[in-house]
Image 1 (spheres, rainbow, N blue to C red):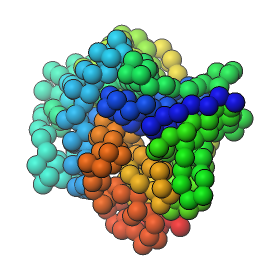
Image 2: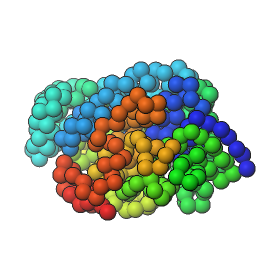
Image 3: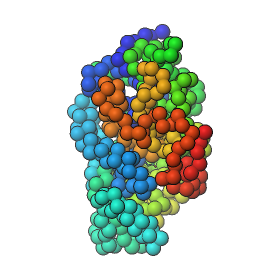
Image 4: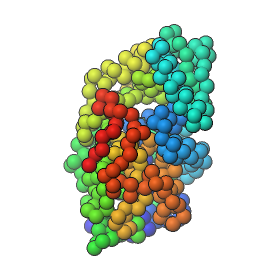
Length: 405
Ligand code: GLY
């Protein structure tokens, strides 16, 4: 048995757990992160890394957009600090997003989105075919117009989580994991011991994972889609479900300058020539198998807008699980158990929301921050939840207007 003392124990070493740990370690707290797989191997390992609250503004959900915009504004300084502390690059880029239309139906979709962006005061600009092709010369000649969103950015989530883990250690924190033998992110997860909160009486006194025991003043559950699996009795409700996303990584000659979207696919170019193509949105429980239909669909939609993808090397096809609460908003703050906190449920937005989540969580722990009601875990304790802002379920996507018990 290995025993450790800490100010804060973090359950889960995905991007949210690592971001929270880094923030706390930067404030001088003794932090231990418990991760049964490799740090950063959760949804963040699969994520494309788009920081695109404006392009994703179509839920018209103002508290969420405000939170995401605040997080984006924290990003440049946050990345600079992580890179300085870790000595590692995070692949942060700020060329903006280009939303392109291949036919009239796509144009109608982007006009609808542009209307929402205008109402919310977010910056985007309709551009004609000539400007689209000037910005992205390799696009299909079928492109008819586009919407340029200059405020969107991107980061490479795999680099970010690696740098975060190193930055935590540089700040005196500890990341425990992986347990030997190091599993692949696609390995059967059930075979490994999960980190769980240690409850004594009505209080959480730390966390344990296999042979490792951490005594801590505060414990934070950041276990993404697995958070409900480690949720203790008495902590309130956490109606969590995994939402599967399959994604491709292609490699070769750089073909794009911006993050590119059509209503059917997104393509994210990395500085090193990688091109991420995503993503499906599926209700399949904890299944992370990669299906041929998904590879076909994603490649076909990518090829329609960027024919050169046919010449790229197929480097990877992988599936991840987005952590979705019933209203698709994150839960950040106190639970009903003393000493136990939570930061999870970021659904499609874990990468973009990481810095603001860490800031809020650190503020809750030291009593200086108030979590907006939309993200307070207490809202989940009621079974009456307003989900009217969510899109109706399409192809099994989203909670729609269903209320999960
Ligand atoms: N954030 C993009 C996705 O979840 O597919």
